[in-house]
Image (cartoon, rainbow, N blue to C red; front, side, top):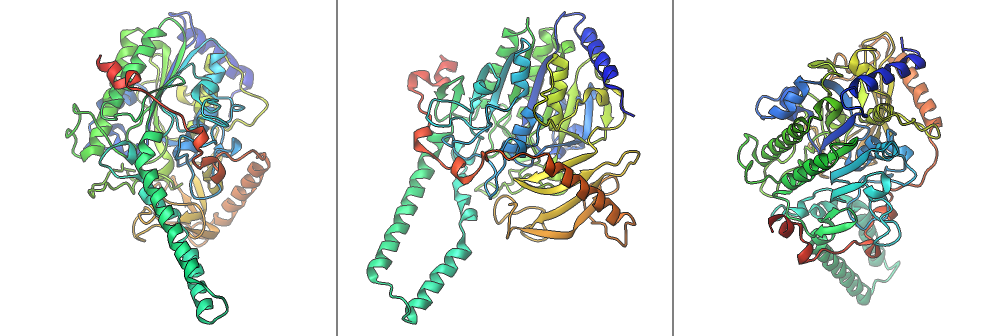
Length: 573
């Protein structure tokens, strides 16, 4: 039974009074999000071969969520949902084609300014706000300096980091992400077209002159040359660090980037130790191309990937130590997570596995199998949250939004649908059940699966309307396209949908059938009704991740740092 609204409100006020009794101020927030970290990569989630003592201590002293779900299995939409508490389809941060994230800093799409982020909401309550690290939610709209999608335009006072994600191109010797562009070329359609053209020419139905053939070859040569130029210039155009609106390093050197960003985070905490703050530390690690500083290189049993995870753990320890040193630990809610599951298809140009580990869960990044969306969820707040508590109820990264707003004294927006729910009653044991009866799992703009946790039941049903076609077939990844796609011909549709009970089969190993599950059709009927209600709540919005929005536009290209502005030289001077 849910507590009455006035009771929830009173409990919240009591909590704020108790939490702020010593400091006389509102609670602080520190959020740490790792890129592409697998839930099986952490010791507190069962890993026995990778050392993550600082994250493990965070879980031991706080609350660990074991069914914490990313709202999307890709970086851009997942982060949009995290910041806004809304399914990314509501803000247009989803694609209708293959490419579901931004690949160029000079794209025009991004998180719309009309969206309310938790940073924007708490800033109005007197908070100092910062994002340090990866953004990946757009930059410009109409010119190279309008910064309409920049963190400063979406509620963050301070920004130090990268607009784009960290890619192979940003790490010398790791190849180029553009080499995987072949997965987006319609070879079948082109082949059919060329064969048809040749047959028509042979039968005399059309005439293809040598001039046409020569022109076609020239066109192919031009395209190949332009592609080569794009690969060559990609790092300079996309791998840069900004401080606020200024580019301070282009291209950046990644080796010590986590250490530099950790220093930035510590300086932010020190500057704002006397006022309420919200820090979003968004790691570039452990996304490809992998990197680790000399201090951590070669220290793990899992190659460069394990080294990078250990460096992330070190950074978590540095931030927690700083909170303790500044006497802020007891008044700060700390949240540690990943944006989605591990990228299993990541193999280096030398043949090394550069992806993470999903544990017992199936598949990884870009899929809505549990391995792609079940992420670490650790919340730490001494004296407010119980230590060592483990919660196995469905929760979402969208839940952070209403949790933060309620704690900061901000009003939950009433002019839009908020899909997240305040986590505090569940974390503190005021309620035993999650408010997420249904969760909708999107693959880009396509509704891929639905999770249903019925009231008064331990069952957690999950229905798939389509699933990705793995390659090789006996694997749980898409090695032929480097990432699984959401559209034909890369998926298989299911009628009736595939059905699992995650409470009994968390690895999604055996789909249920009418013969093995008496409730099969009744469960699907309830889920279909929920889908219909959910669809009615969606409003048409401009698509931010359309081909037109994500394509490179020269007039939007940000530029440039100079030698005197170089962040490396500033650090070492």
